[in-house]
Amino acid sequence: MKTRGQISIENVVKIYDPEGAAVMAVDHCSLEIAAGEICMIVGPSGCGKTTLLNAIAGFHSINGGSIHLDGEMLCGPGKPKASPGSDRIVVFQNGALFPWKNVIDNVTFGPVMQGKLSAAEAKDKARSMMADAGLSGTENNFPGELSSGVRRRVEIVRALMNDPAVLLLDEPYRALDSLTKCTSPC
Image (cartoon, rainbow, N blue to C red):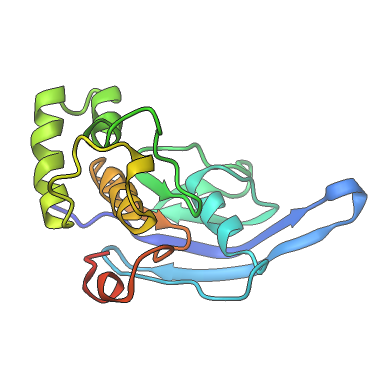
């Protein structure tokens, strides 16, 4: 099976134009990320990291350049905004668990709603992945009953349940303790 997830970012520009004042968010960024490679983009607040991630995910348009995934153009000339897809899953900076669903229902939501797995198959896969992430025993808890670090791990497992080609993590280690950061498979 071919490894998925090669990203090519070529000369990408993103300009926000609030109230007529052009604000350069991404200035001619180019980057190659090989399939299976772990890449971190580091910089100060406001330098365009989240904006670039959102362009890859299909949440923001770009003003110039192009972004390709596995050789296919996501956005670029003639197509300023990528179509969102299950091949690119985002784990948001501020979290996005459903507070009214317990952990197992949060984790299984995506593949069940997309028809990729039956509810039973999704729960089996979720329990296995949750065990790998040290989350066994939290299945029936609600997000508000968990520490922020445990919630973050649930968010990551929920994203991985969808078997994306690319996992886009905004502030990936937010709320994780030092030991988890060092041993996390992410």
